Image (cartoon, rainbow, N blue to C red; front, top):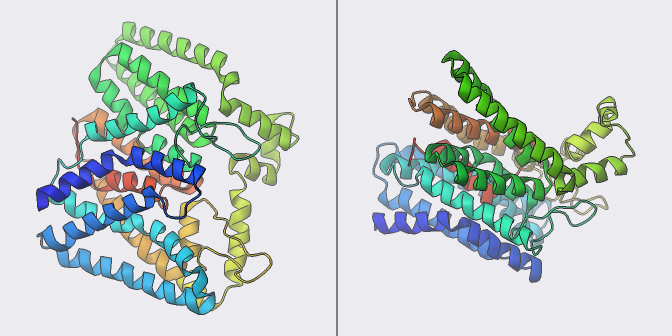
Amino acid sequence: MKEKSLKILKLFLIASPFFDMLTAFMLQYFNLDITIGMIFRIIIILICLFYLLFIYKEKDKKYLLLILGTIFLYLIIFSLEIILNKDITVLLYEIKNAFKTFYLPILLLTFYAIFKENKNFITNKNIVTIYLIYLLGIFIPDLLKIGFDSYEISKTGSIGFFNSANEISAIISILMPFFLLYLYNKKNFLLTILLVGILVFDILSIGTKGPLLSFGIIIGITLIIYIIYLLKNKLYKQLSALLGLGIIFISVLIIYLPKTAFYKNIKIHLNFLEVNNISDIFKDYELVDHFIFSSRLKFLSNTYNNYLNAPLIEKIFGIGYIENYNHDDSSTKMIEMDYFDIFFRHGIIGFILYISIYLYFVIKAFKENLTIKNIPYKISYYLAFFLSIILAFITGHVLIAPAVSIFTALILTRKEQLQ
């Protein structure tokens, strides 16, 4: 039973990109409330819970079950609060979103149990396979001009056969270091050029800021570390070759960039804001919010004010996912900054519960990976680790989107894997 459960779970995780594509087609053409992706992720959670409840045998099982029980108790209280303060007709919508948010803490508890007994459950090679499927799921449709649009109006960009630009951007960003580590270990120049070319094409085609920011951070930090190593060991020929490749890459990027969705979106955004010089943006708070944060600070302010005006019980257990219910200015708009969304949607109690679990695994993962002796893996891991934390704050969709939080949970619970 144990082996069968793990095989099914592993198969489902590797098949994640395909389920996401099926979900995109269902939403694009049928606009269904219940999608294959939703069913697929419920099955993943059920398998994980089954493992923890009936297979896991370690001494800390009772503590994990106690925390798990506390999560479900909170969700019951949250549901009752919704019924009392809103209406039973919106309960399904609220619970569906609450489940998406608490998907990560449940996964952290169950993945922890699985990896504690099965260190090789998901390897780096498995993650790279998943990543390649995501990359090709964007690249091939975009190349053939049959991909779905990143944005419904105004801006341009394509996300291949996926549905959410924000979610696919988050996945591409936080798993990128493991993908680049794989290419480094393969030491195949042609393969590296080909796959990095596909990666850069996808990043620029999507048109969002997150993946490009992540790529810049990863390449920048890696280059600094590598240049220091070359200088320290007086490997000047390799340094010259690296600088030459860097110049070629930057030249190609400068030539190609104006043709990309990312560049076009920057121009569209600047024209919309009536800004002639990009430096003018940083002189105005509203322009910074609109251009850099896509109005997230405005949404944060609106939700904060709604939270202040909410009844005490909603301050404690959360205002939920419909703000100002039964008022003319009711809204379902999320802030899209995960930490703030968790706090306001789930109140003081829900936030403390969620963040306590999350921070425990963040601190645990940070400490455990300090002992890793393989330096390239260590660098890659910490890049993925910090990107997941930073992007959750800046762009969101890292902690509260199940399609992404599956991989966030893997980063925080998976042990070192080099194959």
